[in-house]
Length: 119
Ligand code: 5GP
Image 1 (spheres, rainbow, N blue to C red):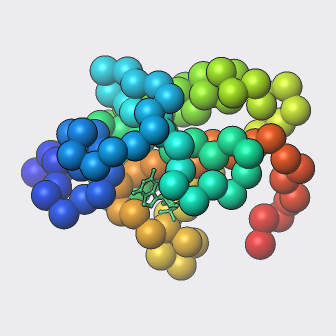
Image 2: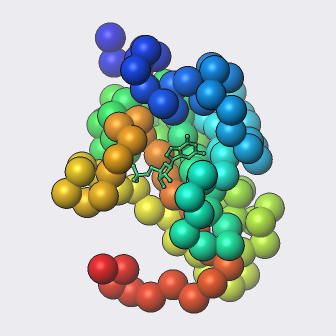
């Protein structure tokens, strides 16, 4: 069923505590943890606890939780003190756009200059 934990999903395992992660924030509906392969001085992933394969399907099915993810991305930026200099919130959606983990997640990136377009 949509939203239910998936046995083969890495991020569901992080939510369950079965795979370790450096968690920086947690709410009733979200978890934020450091990316294992950081692309910037701050690189945090914000995920919903419920399983949806990407951000668009999360927003369609559970818009309040999608809003929670976005709000938490802002809270992470404030805690990491990257909100003053500018930061980026990225939702890679589909393998053609670089998505490799098919559990919705926001990348929060900052602490260095960020070019646009990203390439
Ligand atoms: P995507 O490529 O799907 O947009 O982003 C997935 C992200 O998850 C990548 O930036 C990757 O480095 C990160 N990642 C993959 N495996 C792990 C893991 O086991 N732990 C953590 N903390 N991050 C991971």
